[in-house]
Image (cartoon, rainbow, N blue to C red; front, side):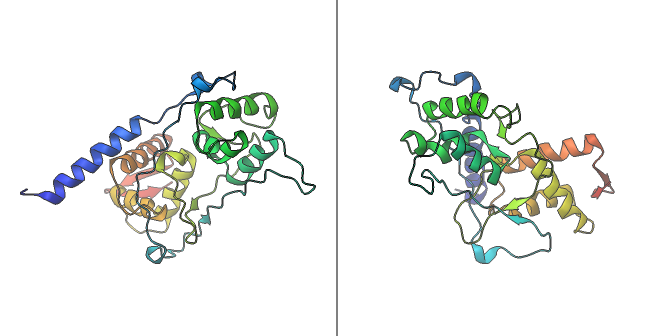
Length: 238
């Protein structure tokens, strides 16, 4: 009652933190028998962050790429049903590194579903392991990418699209590159301001605990690796 705004933020942050813990890393739960309907459990998709409206996004000169989603082409040019591994590879090549759960959600229609259920996860895991194993990096249970991917790009939301990747769906390498690029273009920026600017570039209107935690974790890794340093409280890119 006395400080409604502050208490509201505390409540929102607590909810975000709890939701963050609900994200399931579930390679161990891969389903080998996709016919078992009892195993068709819906995996939660966390998308609580608010997206900035297109009019609020300004070009700061960072030259970041626009995130583009691969079209889900289930039928080939001859009217034939495409193989699941072909469709899955299309999405990976277009959007890599792509979070495993997000990949499952995107290709769920292949298996007659609209959500990333445990059955879908099991089927996609099987394809990555046995049909695309020669092309997909071995740590696909986290972020899926091809073995020959060399250059990670920073990809920000498309103003013409309402899709917003949750912070946990963006790999550490991409977040690190985004922060280094922003720091290079920002004279005397502090770590806290760097986190806020980076979050804004990714379309997040509000920097809750989930977002700041992810960015700070990557920033600490950058410090340990000597990629950045702090000079008089300001971020310096080495």
